[in-house]
Image 1 (cartoon, rainbow, N blue to C red):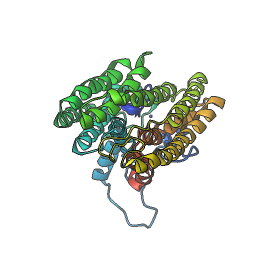
Image 2 (spheres, rainbow, N blue to C red; image 1 turned 30 degrees about the horizontal axis):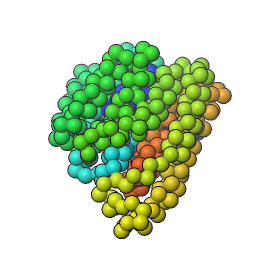
Image 3 (spheres, rainbow, N blue to C red; image 1 turned 60 degrees about the horizontal axis):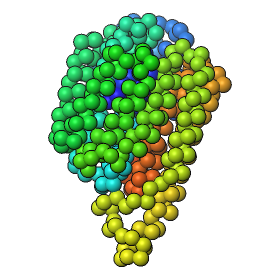
Image 4 (spheres, helix red, strand yellow; image 1 turned 135 degrees about the vertical axis):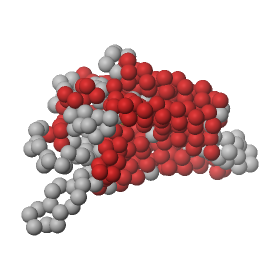
Length: 388
């Protein structure tokens, strides 16, 4: 989706996505000290002839048995890089947090909304690189399109096909979901093609991520009003990440990471400091104090408060440290790491929003996406795939 946010957020490289996001470390999930893509580490020796594609093994040493090229792996690796597959783990939490905010247990329609979100997110990724192909040829020639591993027409066709699939899945989830998915798709395309390099770019990315959360609420409950506060908080986070990402290739901006650091503090306070005690429908029997069933409900907020605070702290720890480093030294590498930290922080924020809404099981499910994403990113085939 809007790579909302992630490349959930970026100027030339920020893909439209639901974080985001908008887009950092080569594996996209490592610690702040994680290595940057080879192209961002300075010039390197040219690869041996015949080893230009991603995923191709280096030439064997003298005396070692020769191995032929693996064009299929190289092509699959190029598409994985274009679509930023490790970043997909930041997407399902939008719809799940939206369902939690609406006070409804996730169901089949929520799954359809998640599928729609994934398609629209990946559409934004492909469209972003298609729109930035000339700029990437100068600044990031290693990327799939400027390196010649994926044709521009194929990337554009993928963006169109994924957008259609996303809208079809939203329609299957019901008219309320489609009513949100349509402007979401419009925000993705508007960001990548028109707004990315304008002052309205960060706001467009934030709107896309917020709409993605609202689509989960609309698909699950048929309405979006109850989820508006959660969408505003998630959108504010995406706005901060996107603003930082606009300088990820040039660096030099102290204002953006310092503002993002302040935003992280405010959001942490808002999420962890105010928890609704409304009981989601279908989670357990709604009961007022003193009525039958109230004993179980009365104990839930205490557990939920602890969980919300813990997830809020995880969100702050994930985002604040790289923002602080980029504030002290706004170099391109540290700015890119700040963007990566902001993107990774999306998952604990989504989980904290679900816990705040009184859905601890859903929040834990969302939180589990973070380690799952790190494990996926560490797979050999994914190590060269950046999330930005």
